[in-house]
Every structure is written in structure tokens, then in C-alpha cells.
Image: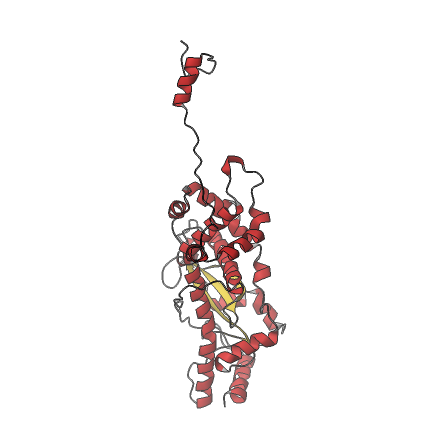
Length: 346
């Protein structure tokens, strides 16, 4: 009888033996992720069934496989895998166990199948300044909070923890609290919708420096928008950016600071809602570039969820870092602030 491991055998007995040695490929039966209740889906993916179907229609043209070869994941499966990772912040193998997939498939889906990049490509559709509604409505909604007039947004930065990056610039990502992060600037409206995003700066860069280098700062400086932003004391007071008084003395000054703090709290609420909805933002175990892509993707998803009125998770407010200012107040900015106090809080 011929030897069973040779390539040129024809004996029937040998073919039988060869089949015994062969490892058959086993494809697991992957359940339809949309075959569950909205409560189940929202708990795990932060979106209802209709919300996930909407994302599938939105992302399908960019992430769909051209063939079904090797039992490739469907669009709903890829979307749900990415949402599970964003929502849970688990290790990739843990996401794989939850979705009945191996770690390599999870990694390939999230990182290489461009789910994050597909979301990033939608940033200019779902994140627009000063918002999707009319100017007058944006100002009215802010005014309802604490009677602070003419506000079109609140601005601040939040740190997204990342793993220690390699390379010569590793130290740039160490922030004031001595862990590695990227520092992300956001502006939000009164409904906690994010209207502007800067996600590219290392954790060591000061909030005010990020703002001054941003495109939105240039647009505001040129008078493109009629209204003001509210920022904390880490920012310099500008004609278009109102900051709190460091030592309010008179009742009007105290009233100004109170209204300012209550209205500006919307950005802290937005950070808390974003990170509660997408737990991965508490610690991204990826490189800085990938962390920026994931952050942008989560921000776009946050706005989509908010616009679609998806159920919001329980919110824990983001930590206020209480940065000290590094740039002096603009003289004209102080004059505008004094006019606000005299006209609206006296």
C-alpha cells in the first residue's frame, strides 16, 4: 500500500487515511445580532434595533464585503462588533467571547475593516458648528439654563487615557496627572450635542493652547459667528469667549459667575454622557493615532444616538482638571465681559 502522506497517491485506502488526518475547517454559527429585544441591544450596543439598522444603512457601502467568501461577517455583525467594543471598553478577546468570534476577527473588524474610519468620514455631517438648529434656537436653549444670553456653545477639553506609546515622543503624551493620554477639545450645545471636535493633541498640551491652534478659534476671531462661547478659567477671556471672574466682589459679578458656571456645566455633562455611553474612552489600549480615530467615531455615534433619542446611560460627570490660565485675558474681551455684567446681571 502506498504511503499515506505522499502527494501522488491514488489508492482508495490511502485517501481514507488522509481524510482522517485532515483538519476540517469549522465555521461557527453566528446568530443574527438584531434578533434580540431593544432592551438587550441597548444594554450591549447602546443602540436599539432600529438604531443599529440605521447605522448599517449608513455604513454599509463603506464596510460591506464584496463576497461572502470564508463566511465573511455581514454588515450588521461588523457594526455590532464595533459597537460592543466602543460600549464596553473590554479587551478584544473579551469582545470576541461575547460575540462568539475569535480575537483576530474582532481586531480585523474594528481596526482593519474601517468601521472606525467609516464613522470618522461622517464627522462633518454629524458634527457641525454651531449646531444643526437655527442660531436663535441654540441661544434660547442656553438662555433657559441660567439666563446667560447670546451663548452658542460651551468649550472644554477632556483626557482620554491611552497605553504608553513607543517612540521618541512618548513623553509628550504624559499629562499633568502623570498618565498617558490624548487631550480632546469639544464644544457642545445645550442639548449635549457635540458641535466641534479637536482630537489630535498629546496629553501634555494645555487646553488653551489647543483652542488657540484650532480652526474654530480662527473663525470666531474673524467674527464669523454672532454669539459667545463659555469656557473655564483656564482659557483667556476673549470677545467671543466668556470666562468666569477669579474674584467676584459685587452681587452682579457673583450673579454672572453663577450663571456662567451653571451654563458651562453642559460641557461636563456631555463628557460624562459620552464616556458613560462608550466605556472604551476611559482607557484605550491602542496607539495615539488609533485612539484619535476611535474618539472621533464615538463622538459621531454619540451625536447619532442623541439625535435619534436613544436611551442614555446613567451619567457620571467628568473630572474637572481645573487648569490654570497660560495666556493673559484679551483687553477687549474683559470689556465685553464687563458689559455683560452691567447689561444682564445688574
